[in-house]
Length: 295
Image 1 (cartoon, rainbow, N blue to C red):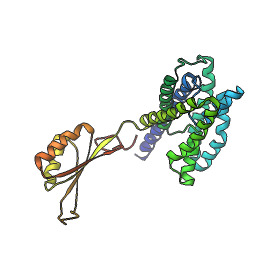
Image 2: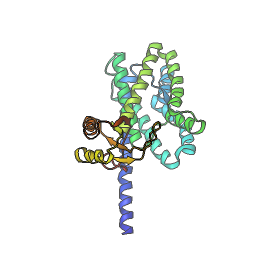
Image 3: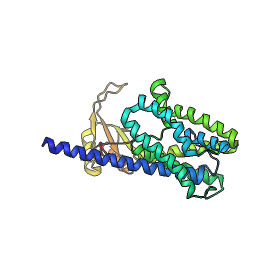
Image 4: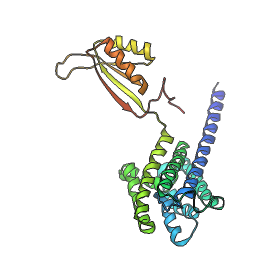
């Protein structure tokens, strides 16, 4: 039994490893396409090492992919030493190498002027495609190096929030891009950063927002039974004490989807019209009835 279980775990790890590297490679390809089709032709700097490489390339003509690779070396060493050891090193190395090679390699196959000269289209499509690439890399449990590593380092060792760390590192590059390509392009570059962040979050975390209901009622058991019967959702009964009256009233805690909220309201109003209910929002629910806890 132990040998069978160990073999199963090994096979699962191998499948997950293959899946991770597939996501990382697809993410690197999406990022390289975003650079070559929209951001480089549009002179849009999205921050990070790749943005800095764009600025240097504008003045020197050096290959962007090569500069991305060279610029990531010190950050790669920093990340390996302080943020994750071998697991970080391998996945991040693959992401950086693939992105660098594809960014320079695609230049031989794609039009250097991109597919549109419209700055707005370059901003929107470049930001979305870049974000998809970043999200796929995150799904593969990797990072794209650059400001990603620096941002996490600042968060981990200097107490700066992740969002502030990214803002600091990317703002410096975008500011330099304003001097290189003009301030209009720099302003659009900020929009690229915002759009890519939204797309990356959607791809890596998915649209898994759920609703959380807290119901104060004297008919907790009856409401819970109706919730299970009609919604097929569980509910947890919690003890509660009124802060003003001091009366003990049970509370129900229930997690459900957005489409189930109206039916929940009907159930509560039918069983206990005097109940008090608060409906909030949670980013994700893991476990029975929702997404599996292990993936």
